[in-house]
Image (cartoon, rainbow, N blue to C red; front, side, top):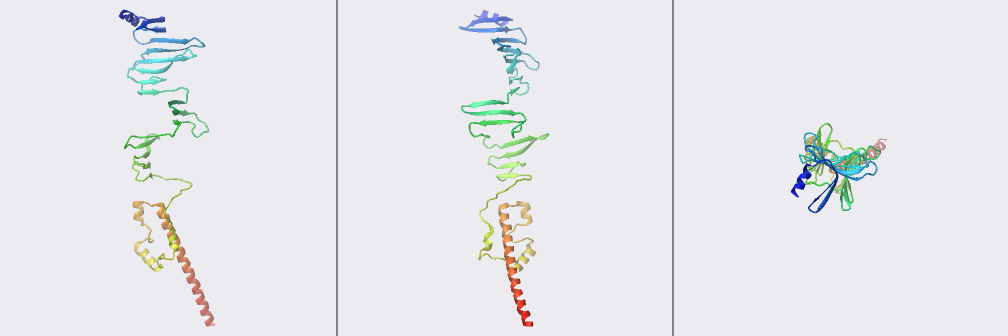
Length: 288
């Protein structure tokens, strides 16, 4: 048995080669075991059309030798299906000279991973009128899509405009930062936001100004307060706004409070003017 294996190792250019090893039969349509590269084992499974089949071939393209599993489908040309080089790199559809694990598809627009009834596709779409045209990414089907990080790790989104820059980050606590790496709020944006509509919820509104028990500061006191503090009562100072920012919901309530107070002042002034006009009319009649 050892002699037969040795003979097989040095044989070359056998057509329809068949040998028995441990009770099994292995048949090749072609075998080339020359010393060096281009060692080949071929299976021609069909001669229909231009031919169908598979082969294993050892190649030395330079830099690293490769073991190629090739196939042909109604073609006289062999194409690489899986390539393993002497560095241990694995390529599907190409020689993996750069990356340890490399896929390349010449025509298909997606690669699929299937788990029971759920699928995850790596997709590449040609230019089209669809919103997803001329783009590549991940398509998940069968249940909700999921992006997950390990415990305590951030999820970062990077774009390349000549250099790789982080554009968005999600912290483990759920805070989201856009153009900021240390978001202190649920959503922190370092930049300008454009929106057609913003709906801000609040727990109260400034209609309390119109209730009878509300104390409306006399104008003389208001004047004194402004002269002393440089801002309206119950409104943050310029320094506070610069240091802490503005809570839109709270500020809208405060601004409405001042508008409603101003309305009450105007109503009081209008009543005072009306009373003064009546007094003037009485005085005029007396003078006549």
